[in-house]
Image (cartoon, rainbow, N blue to C red):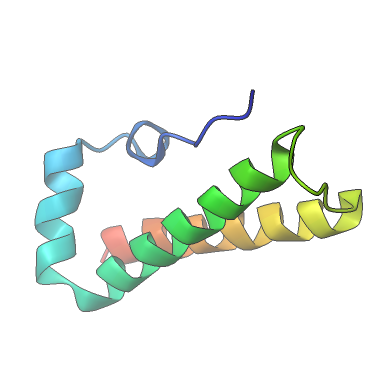
Length: 78
């Protein structure tokens, strides 16, 4: 069964740290929201009961999620 990625663990930041930065930075908040939406779409598309996306469409969605994650990392490092 597909599961959502633990972004906080991937970024090696605590949830509290991310939430504090998020409240101070509207751009970071927007990126985190976008990541969450994309992650939910990926998880939903990977479920066996869903109307499966073609592999190339799923890979494109995963790449978009990764690009947003990279933007989040860059924003956190500012």
